Length: 133
Picture (cartoon, rainbow, N blue to C red):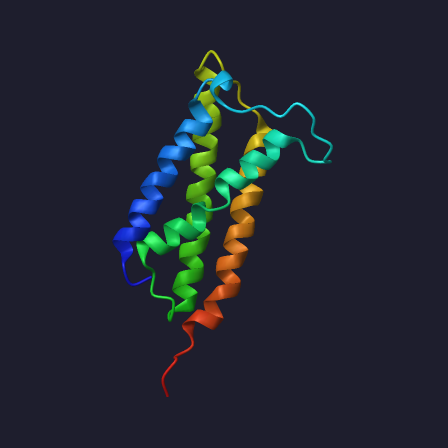
């Protein structure tokens, strides 16, 4: 976490990939012909697309993890920002001719970010402990 610029570059790359996956024509993306899982393939894709958002943002911002209550508030704000981003992608898809918005896509996005935020919450106490005594 010492080099925030690497995380910021990774976040920028993530945003570019996310924009491509959300707004590219459906013909440009791979399709799954046979899917025998209880979760639809596109919902799993949305879950995975938004899973890294909170962690990458948290690392790019470089929050001070020793102040865990401030970090918890920051993680909540990252989740809210991610929900705004997910809503924006669905609304923009609604005005494009080749895509259509889907509330279940948003739900999959939010669940992915929620899982990621839980990982951040769990990692706060262990990362905040001093290694030197």
